[in-house]
Amino acid sequence: MHGEESLLQDIGLSIIFATVLSHIARVLKQPLILGYIIGGAMLGKEMGFELVTNEASIELISEIGLILLLFIIGLEINLAELAKMGKAMFTLGILQFTLSVAFVYSVFPFFGLSIGSEKFDLLYIAVALSLSSTLIVVKLLQDKVEINTLSGKLTVGVLVFQDIWAILFMGVQPNLNNPEILKILTSVGIIVLLIAFSFSVSRYVLAKLYKACASSPELILLTSIMWCFFVCGIAGKVGLSKEMGALVAGMSIAAFPYGADVISKLIGIRDFFVTLFFVALGLKVPLPSLEVIGLSAAIITLMLFVRMITIAPVIIKLNKGVRNGFLTALNLAQISEFSLVILALGAGFEHITPKLQAVILTSTIIASVLSTYIIMYNHNIAATFERLLARVGISDQAEESGKDDKSGHGGHGGHGDGMVRDIIVLGYFRIARAFVEYLEDLSPSLIKRIIIADYNPAFKEELTNKGFLWAYADLAHPDSLSHIGLHDASMVICTISDSFLKGTNNNRLLSTLSKLAPNAKIILTSDEPGEAKKLVADGAQKVIIPGVITGEFLYDYISRGMRNNERVV
Image (cartoon, rainbow, N blue to C red; front, top):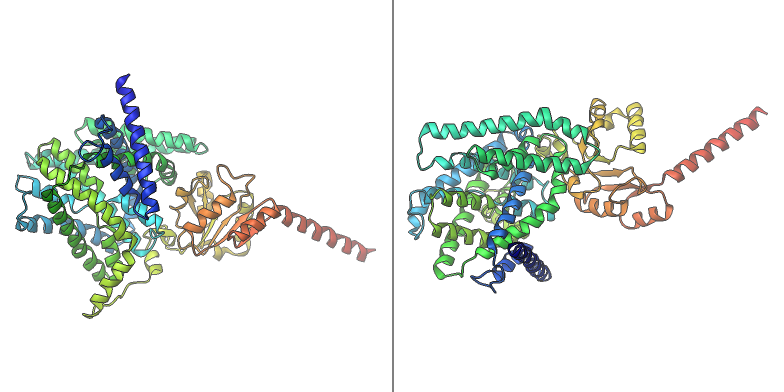
């Protein structure tokens, strides 16, 4: 019982300190992550009050959060969509990692630092500095509503490739001590078998389970989490890391329309555990010495330089623009949580020294905080670099964002069919069904501009056959809406009134849509004229009132009939 009470107390203190410090950070207009880390440092024995006595328990909980995080990252890696990114994205994804590893591995020894002299230190440093933080980048870009800009898409594309590179490295990691070709090929073969197994089960078993419980989002969520931990267990049994199992589990269901819903429902759970993850990082922060600070400063400087020389020139060469090149490089200017996982595994295999692990950890924490400011002011910084290059004759020749969207890489502009889909209908209910039938008869060309987003996949085939694009969305969970490409929509229509909406209402929906679709005309539905006026006052372009429309129709119909009868008489 004492251990359980200690665990409960430690978790409670971690949440309290993280919350209080993050509120202070918010008031001071600082990144919330800074509050989490400082909260952890204040709880620890190195720099704080020694209030947390059971760091192992916090580590365990943060590891669960990391597994859920990697599962969500896997859900974002849709291999079918990855294949549609085009040669430019593949070129960038391949060159960024390989050039970064080669440069760091070759240059780092000349720094003359007191780390990197052991057998595998250089390799781990090179890999660690070549990976960026998906957690920080995606969160901050979503907060800035830049995830669907061209630079945002390039950033996410690079992150996806980095995750794949990390998976490959984790596969060969156990055999670095005995780097025999046969053992390495065996590890790669096990990864391939795990992926094949996971995708096969997803296609023939999970697909049927999802279809059977389509009307129960909670069951979809539980099934997905079960699948995550099941594959993690298999990965552990066959000699792979549980983190890799989480990634593969996510990838194996990413092709299904339920992936966005699973992400939206895991966000809250994940954020709880991820908060503890950063608190745990804070607990580990050693009392800073001049040597550690100096080494960390050198590591971070090298990482920033490597990002600039391996990302911006490639993007400029691919004609995606000078500013987009620097924006993408700046967005990726941090060290990944994945790097900490790889280093932790490396320490377990006795590949690296504890000193190296401590320095990279400190560098990761400092870079995470620094990166939030870099992304916050990324446009100002990129504009400065752009002006400097303009002086030597290198100007911005970026392709238009819309043209890039049509290539099928992310956003509503692609969606894999080459059409620009800028009108989004939320919910396929009575009014939307009538609207679809009306379009079929009178305006078939308009169909090619419309996405219909609904939670029930039973309508997908019907709508696809008619030329519409169907997307999964649960209106009660705003995060699921961010995955259907709202940022550049010209019009967003919700045809469901509050009487039929579950878990939300049109007023909350309007607030969400205003952030996710800042340039769109928003049309909503209400049962009450008074509520309709309020929605218009709050920013809705138009509000449909079914009762009023029905009343007008009945009046016109009856009046017309009476006039016709008078003429007959």
